[in-house]
Length: 331
Image 1 (cartoon, one colour):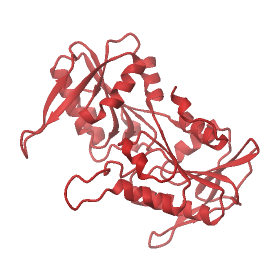
Image 2 (image 1 turned 90 degrees about the horizontal axis):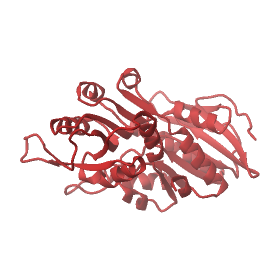
Image 3 (image 1 turned 135 degrees about the horizontal axis):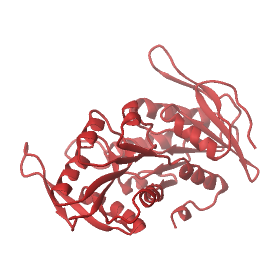
Image 4 (image 1 turned 90 degrees about the vertical axis):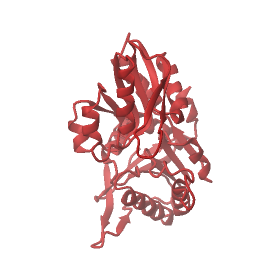
């Protein structure tokens, strides 16, 4: 059962499961994804009020009674990361002060995840700081996808469900690349577990790119561990930001006799000149998900293809509201 809400700038959906009302609120980071999730749950899009004051302070007003209800806040903390993070925190605070029964922060892309450890003296662990902010704002649990580092789950003192885009990516590989001689390639040693899991799903071999920098100011030397000659190589990573690593890896694979190279990435940050860099690389295509709302440059690019994770997120949210298993999504 759904109930309508007044107009404004933030989307609100309401869905009754087993007598409990589920509500979904989205900030401004990725409204198309939120609308797709609403369609999967067969819920109409209704709006609430979100705006900025003259000095760009964010104001949020929930235009419906949420007392005692199960509320999901959809917000990726993508560019501009700080604005979207503040929207998320202020929305959670507004819900908490409105006596919501439970608040789940649905963060398809968890920004600051690459700052998960101290890399030098006197540096922060920003992923932990963001976890503290979300928890202290009033979130009761978090739903996210393909965290850059698994240990970030331990940064939260509230329940966290980390979804994997593997089922969505593997389905596209099977649909678009049937009968090809596939090798899954991790672009660095840190992504081997992720690449191996996807290789198992599509019955592909595994190779690893070993990146080494001989000395400061000298470009990286790319060594390939595994046989890629005459193979259709698929680079697998969680984040593509500048896309430099993927493009360099594609060149290294082609130099070693690969028949073709493409890349599958969960979070397409694609900042700066990344789209042009991908277009100029040997990669046939770059496949990303819509965890981050694609920019206009991404949308018009002929060799970048977005996949929707709306069904995956909608099913996980439904299961959380029903108090049923989320992990069985990946059995």
